[in-house]
Length: 146
Image (cartoon, rainbow, N blue to C red; front, side):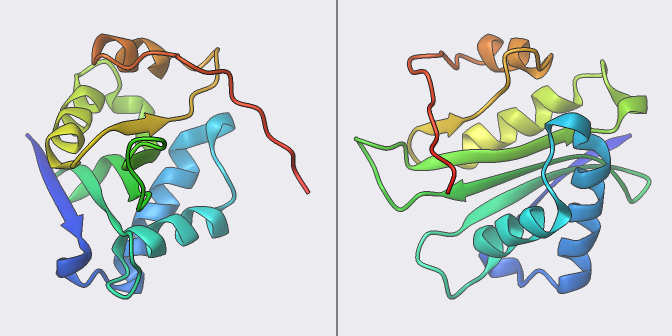
């Protein structure tokens, strides 16, 4: 049975908890992921009590093992920039197609105060889930990497 859990700043997540989540995301994001160090920075931002913005984590677990994870960061802005950015979401490949991604997205949408932005590559199959949940592609993102 899949259990949905949340972690917020008030839960005082330990380094070991964040490390377990980062390992899961690094392993299961595949080509859509980032280096583990960047995932840890995102988790620190979402769960550190001393930061202004913060965020939260939603986990799907089966028998105590993570089978899905989502990390949301608060942006500290509103109106001109959405209040939240969904940074990472992944489901264990052996559990895909069971609605786990939808369940953790539903929980995240309920928990988020304000609008949510996310970045998704055009060829990412998760794009269909986001569209079903009401996300639209209003802008083309451009970046200057320095």
